Amino acid sequence: MEMQKGQVSRVSGPVAVVEGISPKMNDVVLVGKERLVGEVIKLIGDKTVVQVYEDTSGMRPGEEVLNTGAPLQVELGPGLLSSIYDGVQRPLPILRELMGDFIKRGALAPGLNKEKKWHFTPKVKVGDEVRAGQIIGEVPEGNITHRILVTPKVSGKVKKITEGDFTVEETICELDNGSKLTMMQKWPVRISRPFNEKLLPDIPLITGQRVLDMLFPLAKGGTAAIPGGFGTGKTVISQQLSKWSDAQIVIYVGCGERGNEMTEVLTTFPELEDPKTGKPLMGRTVLIANTSNMPVAAREASVYTGITIAEYYRDMGYDVALMADSTSRWAEAMREISSRLEEMPGEEGYPAYLASKLSEFYERCGRVKTLDGSTGSISVIGAVSPSGGDFSEPVTQNTLRIVKVFWALDSKLRERRHFPAVNWLTSYSLYSGQLDDWYRKNINADWNGLRQWAMETLQKESELQEIVQLVGSDALPEEQRLILDVARMIREYFLQQSAYHPVDTYSPLKRQYAYLDAIRIFSKLAQKAISLEVSLEKIAELPCRADLGKLKFEDKIDTELPKVVKEIEKQFAELGV
Image 1 (cartoon, helix red, strand yellow):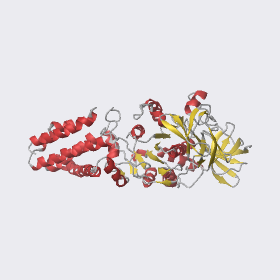
Image 2: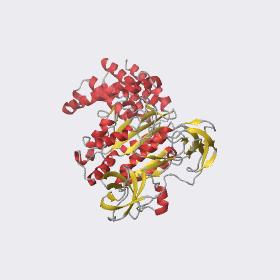
Image 3: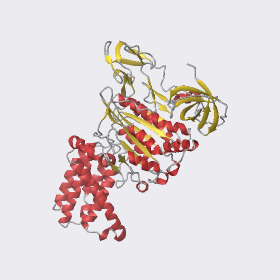
Image 4: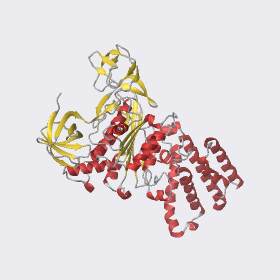
């Protein structure tokens, strides 16, 4: 079919006005001599407004435009894992081989390798009825089994299916209605993939980070925001979640971050080892790199590319974690395009539809029953970079209306070298109540009680700090000074966690419970000792207190912890408690 031709009539940054074509909204068009990829974002009479995904410098009115007649879509199939893409699914390593370190405009390369052969093992046989979204076979890929799905809206009876080695474009299955199935699907990025039903978020996404799992848990299929100023550790937390969370697939979208930050991700991720399998972490990861010097429109598309790939793996029945770092840069891209379109600006110049665009994106996550009847989930963790660390700005505020978990990173904690710098007084999780049953059944019946004790202690410490700043801690009674001391133990021993220490980097849930419970046992015995008029100085000098602090760096922490608890009880018994 011949493409419809038109011409450029006006160019303003990444936005071009085109005449002579009659496309649909969101159609992809090829603009100018270099065939730059663009997307239709507005139709005004016989004029078409296009956002171009590349730099439009030097483009002039009169240059030719071709309408492809199809929306922006991604290629889905074996070969996604371990890939590094830009915002519109162009594989960056392949473009580098073709063009060197600097990618020229108009560069195109397919998202999937069309020549590599994959070994396909069928899971259905000739004569079986198959429906949309059903798994018909498997292909080994990276650290997982890639399940081949029937394309949505296709169903029928299997006429022919073959085991063997195929490229992603070769037919692997034929249906009696003439439909031919390959290992590759194409899907428009702005339309969510179908599923049967959404399930309640009542299973936690286990991260191994004590402050997150114990105090502010995230459910599988849940949404979280990590707002924080420069240097507060958003990227390190995102990397820790990628490495240690119990999601089987990780999609990392570096959306408009600085080049050096993205370089760090691209160089460290391929070297990371997947702790579950011992294989490279990239074997279950897709990276989408879109640095701040890349075209602004591609930045806006990158989060949709990421969530569409995540939905594809969710449909196979996998738990997917998507890190969007950062949604602020995505919102800034929307603001820039909106101003080029001369739309009425909202708060701080952001478009009036900022909130609906954010909610549209976060709405695509969730734990679902797939078309095949299995259960899959997408958990979205969106980093937000508010200017000057000001959480009252529009992107942070609109994100907080949508997400259920708020991990607030604090510049003051960063200055005190307390990492992860999650502020326990301003952060929250709205999933805690729904997850309590799971923790009660799988970890300990008193999980919720222990969490409440820790939060109450930290809140009391905050209230007492105001008095301490006025009159000094010596003016407080011993019971209140003990609260300050126990809160300090919770902060320094339990909440502080080193991402770079081989033992402390990951803490299983049972160990988290036992460790915090040991601090609670110390606190209860210390309260009894004070009621028996033992001085706080004597309690602070007990060797078991220091042993408790060193314990988190011990190789044999799980066997040593019960010994330390016995030692705590023994040393308090010697004080007469």
